[in-house]
Image (cartoon, rainbow, N blue to C red; front, top):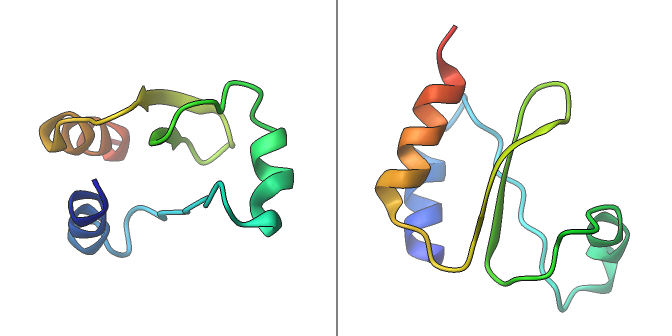
Length: 76
């Protein structure tokens, strides 16, 4: 999934902020603990500007699904 996500990150540069949490990195533990439903890898969250989770995906996701959700979220 990393190549897909990095491609989307480049495609949406300046419009969407991508944040990565590495389950093996102790520095990200507080963020993961704040997300009680974070229990799958990969786990994608689409968070709006107010910090609310508006979509989430568990496991492998089709790139079109992510792109569609991002496009929808960017609509005025």
